[in-house]
Length: 180
Length: 80
Image 1 (tube, rainbow over the protein chains, first blue to last red):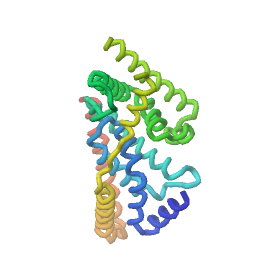
Image 2: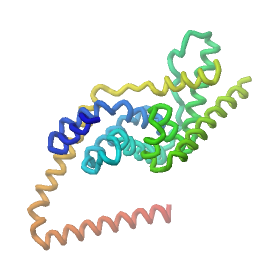
Image 3: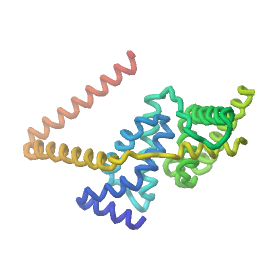
C-alpha cells in the first residue's frame, strides 16, 4: 500500500515508467474481472489496456484518503466492463476446461456441460448482480469495497450477491432436471 | 458431483487467467504515444492560445463540434 503510493507519487512527478509496476501488479485481476463481467475471453486485453490508460490519465484525481488504489482502479475497470457488456452481448459459449479431473468420460462430459451452464447463467444475470458476484467470488473483495466500487450501500451488495448466487443454483438445478 | 464441488470447479476454471507477456509493454507504449500526441497538440496550439482571437476561435470550434455531436446523437436516438 505504502510503496504503491510511492509509485503513484513518482508517476505524478514525471517518472512515467514507474506506472509499469502498477500495470504488472494489477493486470491479472483487472483482466479477470473484465473477462468475467463481459464474458468475452478475447477482447479482454484491449479493454484492460483502456482501463490502465484511463487510470494513468486520471491519476491526479486518485485520493488515497478516499480509497485504496486497487478500489479506485477496479471502479474504472467496472465502469468500462459494464459499458462494454451493454454495447455488446456476445453469443457466448464457454470453452470447457480440457481436463476437470479423473472421472469417466460420461461424468466428465456432464461436468463440462454443467460448467457451460454456469457460464451462461452468469452472463444471463442482470449486469449489477453480475459485477457484484464477480467482485465477491472471483476477486474475493470484501462487501465494503464492492459497495465503494458500485457506489451503493453494503446491504444492496449483499442482496445482489445473494440473488446472483441463487440464480446460479437455480441454473444448476434446471440443468439436472433437463438432463435426467 | 454435488453442487458445491461443481461451483468450486467452475470458480477455479474462471479464476484462471493468463496475461500475455507483452501486456505491460503495450500499455506503456500506448501511454507514451498518448503523451506524445498530447505534447504535439500543446506545442501546436500553445503559441496560439496567447492570442485572444485565436482562443475565441478555438472555443467556437469546440462548441460547434459539441453541438454537431449532440445533433448527431439526437438524430440517431430519434430516427434510428
